[in-house]
Image (cartoon, rainbow, N blue to C red; front, side, top):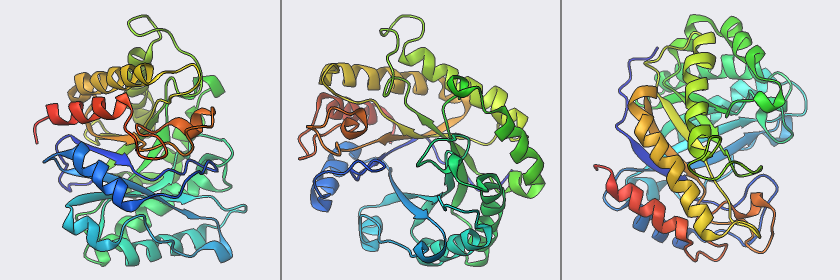
Length: 326
């Protein structure tokens, strides 16, 4: 395990609107920054962004949502996710892409996430890409080495996984595979493990306060990750967990009040158990809807509408951030 210093509990958000193929109005950086300033108050704050390696000719580095200077001027912490999504296995190209990402963005990055949910074999997610387990185990070691070579030792490296995969038959093979593929260099390169958490976003759950509600499912996800999955991979309890993505939508049958109550219940559960499970970061997905008129939950995960009008959950999130020590 790395000895790089851990952070106190820190909040953050995905500020752009695109969710997979779901797109709507173009993002407005000035509106995004105004909302972020209001949400964060005086607290340190994380901005999550994604770039994708799709192999071969697509290995160009796209611009991020904000210019480099915004991160220093606003004292924002960049959490940069490097996704592995080629159609054919391409580990050499992937490792070159990681080095190029670090050469371009290493001076900005606070957290560098290598792969997006490689345990989840679902179209559009890294877990469905050929060679993803080698991409993870080799990629995180190369990222750590290249960061050190470039003088970016302060950058924390990790990867994220999706919530327990019981509905898909479990993901035990993933954890045993990375344990055998990775070895000591892999574990030593890990500063944190991210968790993608959407208990009620895409399927119904029990009402709040009953068994199987969002709170109990959140606690179950944390417990499964810490006590079962990470243990199987040889990743010790001293490696902190980041809630890398957590979201809950509005929709035709989900009012703003329902979204706000669900969000508060999940975050309060995380805060209550953060010491027990060693959780140090919470990042919301996301700031605004991709398209508020579209009933699909992928389009309405924001705490603002697609025209940056705050929903009830926006005020809830702002209050929860303000309640934490700065």
